[in-house]
Length: 153
Image (cartoon, rainbow, N blue to C red; front, side, top):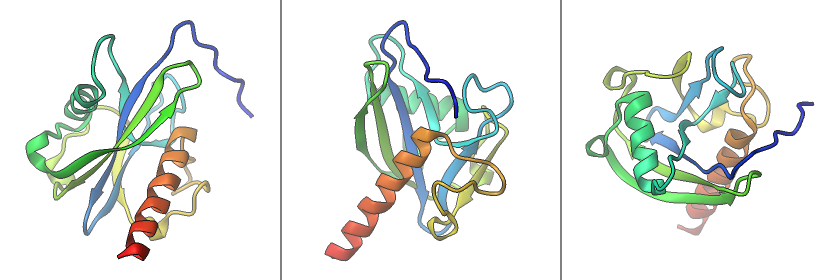
């Protein structure tokens, strides 16, 4: 088990669960130079800059990491807002896009991959790589939310 991280100042994060109606959820395989969780599956996103709003941060991160812009997204909304262990906040957005891997440019990480929800068995590793803790929690919440909405329809 890993040692708990200590933080000098509060950290806030903005990330996205990106869903394509046919291809599934877009995940990032973090590379060996990732400061935390190298070679783990994660979500696209990252640290918010001082004074930056969550909306601005998530779009900055998606542009940097994927060259994904708001014009390429059909719907988006804040889906999760949770406390970060540092005293900051984690914001997870839900996005729907028709962008395929050919439309995107991986600017950070080892790989990107669309994955069908049915192929995930969280928190078990996927294709030999574990998920970050944040990704596991965010995806489990997302999947439960989607199932709940489908049952309510």
